[in-house]
Each structure stands twice: as C-alpha cells, then as structure tokens.
Length: 376
Image (cartoon, rainbow, N blue to C red; front, side):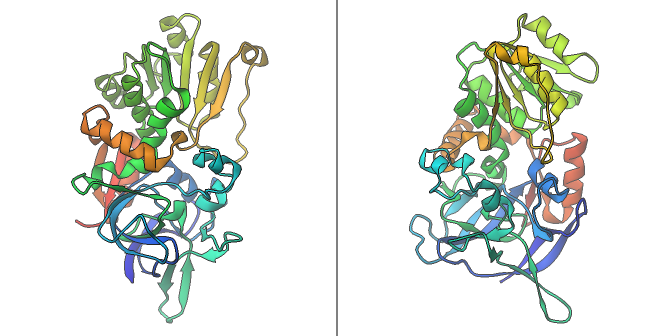
C-alpha cells in the first residue's frame, strides 16, 4: 500500500516526507493506521547516529492508531482495535523469561537494527520500499521498535501493541509507549520510593516530568526538579514539584545539599549528560539510589568517587521504566482518567509535514512533547 513517512537519509540530516510502499503484515504482525506519534529523544540520537542503526530509515516509536489488518496467527488483536505501540522484545531470553522484557538480551537488534526477525537472526528487510523514478525499488530500513511510526501506516507485532478503549484520545496518549512510561516507570516500577522519600529529578523534559507526576502519586517529599529552562521549571512547580532549581543560575549540587543536608534518597538522571549523572550521584545520601535514564552516544564514560560509592550508594540503569507495556500502560491510563497523570499538559500537536518545526520547538524548550498527527 502507498503511505507517507518521515525518512532520515543521512547522519544529522532532516526528516524528509516521502511517498513509500508498505508491505502487508506477515505472521504475528499487524497493520496499523497511525493517528499520532510522539517524537522522542531516541529518535533524534538515532538520526545523529549515536547507535549504528542503518540509514535511510523511518523512525518513530511512540505510535498510536487503529488496526486495519492482521497477519497469520494473530489472536489477541483484531481490525478496528485502537492500540498504543511500545518496544520490541523476544520473549524467550533469560530477562524476558524473568519478567523483565525491557532488558531483553536482544533489545538492540530488535529495536535498532532496522530489520525484522527471520526466526534465526535480524536479517529480514523492513517492509518499506521507495519506488525510484527508474521504477526500481529502494529498500528503506524500518522496524524501528517494531513499528517505525513516523508514517501514515506502520507494521507492528501482536506482542508490542496494547489494545485500549476506543473512547481514549490516541493523540494525547501516544507518548505513553516510550517517554511517559519510561519516566513514570522509573519511579513506580524501579525506584519504588517509600512515602516521604526525598527525590531529585535532573531534567524537566517529557521523561523527567512524567517521573515527577509519578513521584507525586508515590507521595515523595521533597520532590526537587533541576533544569535550565525557566518555563519548564514553572510547569514542574504546577505539576507538584516542591522545589525547583535553575542550574544555569546556581550550583545545583550546593542547592540540593542545602535543601537536603546529607543528600537525597533517590535521584533520577534523564539528560544523558555524563557530568549531570556525576552530579546526581554526588547528591545521594548514604545508601541512596541514582537511576540513569538518559541515552548517550555509545562509549560515553562517567566517573565516580569510589569512596562515595562505597557507602552503599547505587547507580542503576533503567530501560523503558522496567515496564511490561500490556500491564503498565493500562495502569497509566487509569491514572490519567483519574487526573493523577495529566500528560495532556505536556503535549503539543503538529502535522507530520511540520516535523522539523516540532523538533526545533522541542530542542528550544518551547514544547515538552511534540506529537505528530498523520491526518489534519
């Protein structure tokens, strides 16, 4: 079928809206008409080739839409179902069998290779083609997080879609599949802070603010948010932060230690900056835990004072908020329905054709979570 998609053709290059051909779903796959797709920091670092994902490629991994067709063997999803799309995992490795699919031993191949799984390796081309003026087909990489949802239609799998109620606003909830579940899950699934625990969140983007809303649900106190964009800090205050720190104006470590002498119980680093991670670690009290969410270029190093580490402090990597999407996304939706997880305050909508404008607004801090709409 003919679709429109945003294609990245060169490292650091623009997202180009192109006419492509999408193949029919194979066994275990579903065809989804995309209603909306959030833009995530991970899309941008793959555009910039932080990971060796092949180009050209269609990115996008916060898709939401309506199922139009299913491949052989699909049983739990039907045409007409409204779905959110999340990450891919094998289901058979030690992590998956232990109930930790976000740490699938094949996470990189399944989400970042640009290829589909043949049953033995990730060596099946993605279902995307571009017809050249000569009539010859050009293969476009895809299957990004088993979706490549920056497009009007995408092929996902029965395993990585979550069926939701048809009355829900797919446009608003699309980012649940990655950014929002990552931030909220880091609090509710990974750190699991005790009531009254002190927490500092470094970075007030969509992941950090989702973590903040979850921390309010978990009744942390104090909740300290650090960023350099005043508008983001103002929003953090309105969402429940007890204290905010503008790191462009004051020394963040000194400010935190004045608020919490001895350090905080929990810290969450969402920026992927090694210097920020080091600062977050230094903010911890004895036996404190620092969660690392932010993605950085492969090979990036961070250093820690070994004596500070020796006193029971922990640095814990967190992927996808330790989420089991089919279980956790419905929980977040219920919190949203109750007004306890107001992600509608974080999103701004753009047509697919305005993707570069949306990215610029995201980078400048004018918008927290840009969401692209496939139909005007």
